[in-house]
Amino acid sequence: MKKYLLSIAALLLGLLAHSQEADELGNYAEFSIIPRLDLNPGWYSSPKEFGFDLGNSSLYTLFEGKASEHFSWTVANHWIACPGIEWFKEDTGALYTGLGFSDTNNLFDFAKVDLTFGSWTFTLGKDCISTGGHEYEDWDWEVHPILATPLWNNLACYQWGGKVAWTTPSELSTFSVQMTTSPFGEHPFGSGLWTYSAQWSGEYDWYSPLWSVTALGIDKGTYNWLISLGNMFSFGDWAVTLDWSNTCGLDWDFTRLLSGNTFHGRLDYASSDRWNISLRGNYVTTDREFFDANWWNLGTVFQFYPLRDSQDLRLHAVAEYDSLLDGLEFSVGVLYNLRLKLW
Image 1: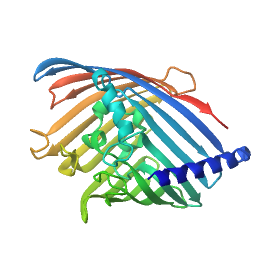
Image 2 (image 1 turned 30 degrees about the vertical axis):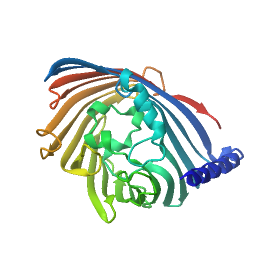
Image 3 (image 1 turned 90 degrees about the horizontal axis):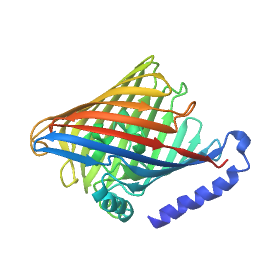
């Protein structure tokens, strides 16, 4: 894997040097530093207690750009994880000790290059597995984990591999196939386990589908099938998102998918670029080896962008009820995207 990383780094450096001579073609490079701080209190009935953690508090960086009409890149790093004071050292350390493993997310979320030729795009490097519905479209630092699905919270979805995508001449539909290392193999390439995905995405006026079928290797010649049907409906200032997948998440050892159903829904309203509000929830059906009963949660999210003509600074507040915890959870926080344009 070290040789693979060095090859990508060398390719990036060479093309970045070349891109400095071609700014007039719309080429650019931008580096972002993205800190986030959350404060998450909670009140639970069973047992009766008060809880507190730091939610999705974290530090990320994003380095992305375009070196020509054919070449672009994305490198996203997760430097600090801070879900709680007592877990700070453990969770942050895991980002670094997990670098040589594929069964856990680590320092690199994305480290990929895109080669585009007409309607075709070829992607190489570390990328998100082409699965999941619209829930997977947001950057990790933008997500509110207490309202995310069990699959999003537990699947090591960033894997090494390649993808081929074709966009129709109308640019309304994109079809892709992908091969990556498996999140159920201990080491990216040494485990010999692979994941195969096919995905369809589109934007048809008021309807945006994001459907996929994924075969995740859990043993030599053995696969778990993950089907995801994401659907978004837009009507003026309103958007409705309905995602379904054929699993309730991972087992307690994170070694396989568990059968069941996950329904993820959102109702978003935004009449201004400076704020939005949404109602979100999940409903999971499964057998008793994962939850004692079917699980659901429901909550609301309010996001406000105080800077005029910019969404770099975000203030957010979240409230949700969790049926498994039989309690209320809250979150207030701030996210800032410090953008440094290199050229």
